Every structure is written in structure tokens, then in C-alpha cells.
Length: 73
Image 1: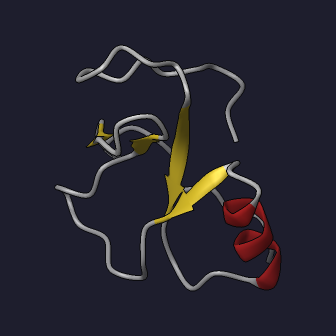
Image 2: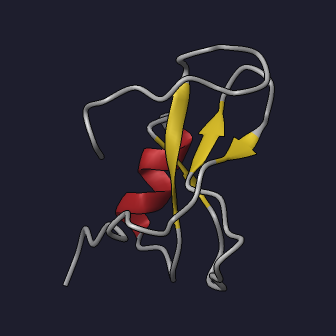
């Protein structure tokens, strides 16, 4: 996960996390449970959001130009 905090465009909170797409491993489930990421599902397209606000639930940003995180090979 990137160290830079993203500000929510709706509520202004910096309590945001990266949305991770793809078939999740057990470790990703644990990261989501710990509040470090949000699982976005297996399907991804140009409208898929990149970040999730833990305060208001807003999903925002774009995946264009952002590498998709690969935790396990």
C-alpha cells in the first residue's frame, strides 16, 4: 500500500484506503479485516475506483496510471 494518504472528495477525511482488485488471498482478507485495504472484487474496468473512505464510504479516484498491487505471486 502506498504511504501517501488520499483525501476524500466528499467528506475531506484522510482515513482512506486503497481498493485492491482480483482474486484475494487469505492475507488480503486479513488486511481488509484490519482496515488496511478494501477488496474491490475480481472484475475491473476503467470506471473502477482506486480508493475507499472509511468515514463516509465514498469510493473515488481512478486506476488509470496507478499500478495494480500484487502482494503474492
